[in-house]
Amino acid sequence: QVQLVESGGGLVQPGGSLRLSCAASGMILHINKMAWYRQAPGKQREVVTIITNEGSQTYADSVKGRFTVSRDNDKNTVYLQMNNLKPEDTAVYYCNVAAVVVGLKTFNAWGQGTLVTVSS
Image 1 (tube, helix red, strand yellow):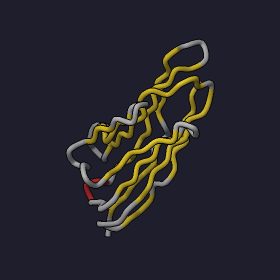
Image 2 (cartoon, one colour):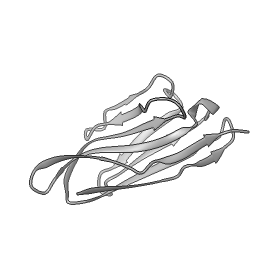
Image 3 (cartoon, helix red, strand yellow):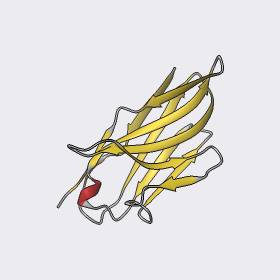
Image 4 (cartoon, one colour):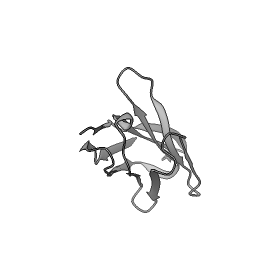
């Protein structure tokens, strides 16, 4: 009932920047939480940042001051601006959206993942 399409991953050198996008579509009435997670090779998936429908943001300590999350409610899209990237940021990044859909059901959706590789 909710589909997510991510874009923006790729290969970047240390210190570089990337911007990820995640667009939600489907039978959406309202989107509550939007978030980005990441999973590095051999590690568990971890939360990177969360943004509420009021715009309140939280960040993992490892990305504070470097990453910025934003959302466009008219487009049902969430963005992740990543600056000063480090090799330890290398991971598959997943978008996560909690939405209220037609029928007033809460639906938790995941994107397909986009690979970010930070390497010289």
